[in-house]
Image 1 (cartoon, rainbow, N blue to C red):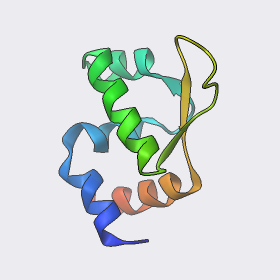
Image 2: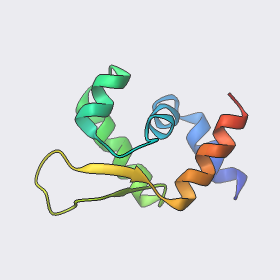
Image 3: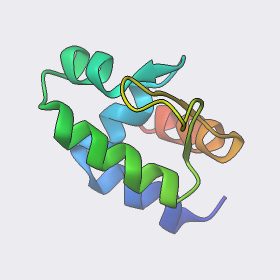
Image 4: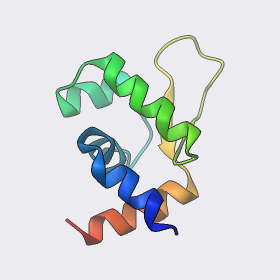
Length: 85
């Protein structure tokens, strides 16, 4: 695991919260309610996490309420982040 990948998440307050909240598959709407943040902001973060291969969309063909979960890489990053909590 590269430190750059971990620090990229740690530097973003909301990115870190989203990764910590994705212990099971969730939608952007569920995450936005849990984290008290606008859904579009969460959707942007989920898109960034997908580009970095930290999260994956489980049902990409659905037009709304798509579920996301951490990838194997995301799980490793989560474990590292938890060490700094």
